[in-house]
Image (cartoon, rainbow, N blue to C red):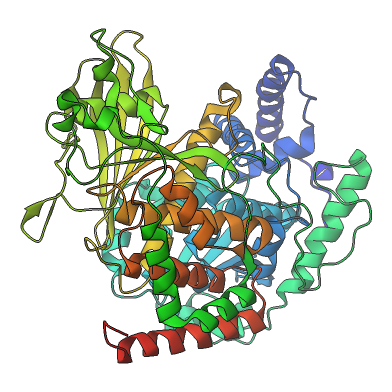
Length: 613
């Protein structure tokens, strides 16, 4: 590799280097960091054509992104990053384009939003790009990204991740993003791309092109195109990954070890082991692993029970009435705050509002805390707000420091009012007793709507950003035809929660998974309980590779009475968990085949059986 520091530079370039080092090292001194040298200056200046001002901005964004996504704390041998890397959804090719630019490939069909987080995906990309950018040729000629959508579906697409990756590559990484070729996208992607382009600068829009697979040889040499895309290049992702690991090992040894680095480095050979993925924060709190099973054991359990046995489990749960009292929910002054007269709010776990008028009854809202996986009070399960309780709803969101709301209902279903529209639209603001709620953005997708609001406390002036997910494809009392959409949104919700906690930084002193997430449908028990049960098991699978439904639902019903209303919802929890396991990178091929065969047989059995079976 050429020694870039030894290359003779023009006076203008020397001046740019001096300006960059002066500004950046001033930042380093103010933050107690070691100064950077000429090689770092050249890396960022080359990415911005020796414009010192733009290069300094790039460096600052680069440092911000590294802190935001914890890119200085990478642990490639540990979960979840090891599975992300071995999954091969992102890789860098050995070949280059005709102009010498490096070529990276993101395979959309290998991405399952519910199975990973944005942070983990970006860490996997950054880990490989760090090695790629050690090449002077890459820094000089830039990077081409192939976004391969061949064979992918809507469940593979993650709008939020796409924006973050583009922001990272274009505005926060010291390599010029030369081109983005979107290969063979599905028909639905046209509308998504059109909307996505609205957020990009004109110069970046010009570099993005939709390219049918058969046209790709007109953009890249055939020898630089992977065989999977019709070229002649044999892609050896494992060899590339091991090159990255060797470099990482050397860096660790030079620096005396980094966070997450193993004492003895061994090449990853495709075998994934969970060395340190277990959660360690307050493991006695919240839902644990009582009765949990491996994926294969879970399948065997369902095969033994069959649908009749699974339904019988649910009816056994229903016959066990919740222990606890319902004192506040039955008070005459509170009855009008209950959406349904037969759905009561347990006293022991109910969320209590601050008393605004000095009356004890003013602290009532039909909402209960429910535990998550190894996290007490992970959720607030509540009913859809009524016209006279929407102010209480927003007060609760503020007082419990909520940053994410999940709404699993439409306002009107089957010609019946299920929930009011309790939020503002069109950049308007709604005023309540203690705070104002302002609408910022609405994004509509096939199966859900995402909204962003700002809550501002009237007395303190403090503002908080809140993300609102409304699932629109889940029928009342029923279940979706597939868990795909539900799992997709489970992933998006968790990512939004992680982003909020990350943005709080040291201000957040609580559980690493953040403050409670509000989840509601109409009554706040059926779809709400199903969603929470699935989310608990997604976390459980990621932590210990096991899952469990009966004890989870049994516990949740002691915290929110009547949680999960129908045997179909209870059965759906089982099937959704297996669909999620099917898409996990840590699931072995044998396990995937077993899950696929089982789900196919189960669905056929359900189709052929009667309701009285």
